[in-house]
Length: 295
Image 1 (spheres, rainbow, N blue to C red):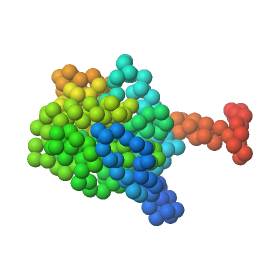
Image 2 (image 1 turned 120 degrees about the horizontal axis):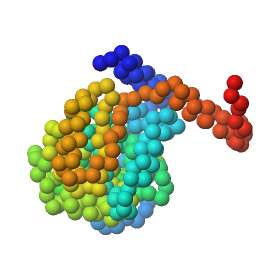
Image 3 (image 1 turned 45 degrees about the vertical axis):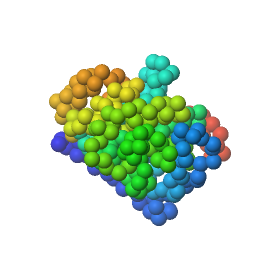
Image 4 (image 1 turned 180 degrees about the vertical axis):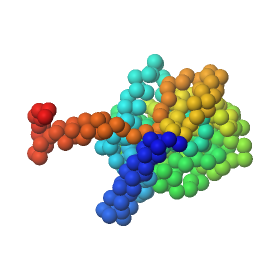
């Protein structure tokens, strides 16, 4: 690992530590209030449970630090994805990586939260990594007895498996208990039923899939989706590994929308420009302020 990469990772760790310290000193824990769903939903979705009050990990910046530079990048990713949609029906996106530890789950969650902040969109996040799913951990939901594995086991009925955050209004389908044969469940007709239901009731379906190279699950999911985002970790993922994952996605006959590079820090000029915009956008009374002259 290069000295530059080590310095970037150190800066990222310090940023997360600062967020954690701020949370601890102000509230004891980062708590996002969640209220029961009052909207009447179609019977095919069944009851949607309230997540209660959850403690979200600081890595989920779209919820914990929405004004940060990294959260802005997730909003840019959201915009780029929406611009890539060739037809209105393209709404199911699989987020995967070559191997474990590249940040695919954090990317999928932040992307889904960014989409859900657009009021006109209904978004559901599916944790399809039934081998070692981590969405509940990142969102502080705790272990879930109901999830994708139980839904597929009973033929695709969603009743009782969906959970919803209130702000932003993101619906979640956890992975559920670990099944003995995840790939076989994904190959069943039940997956098509689940995705058909979610397509009909949501504007976007974001699927957090297992990594591409170790298991077959991502390929099965990609075949049912409208596009794939491949997550690559800067300074860790080898070029050969990334190319292998790229080729594997092509063999799936899936549409690769693009790659997301994680664990990157900004150049000083980028951060300075962003802070300038935020600081000078309004004066103390909330009114637009005139731009300052360059010195």
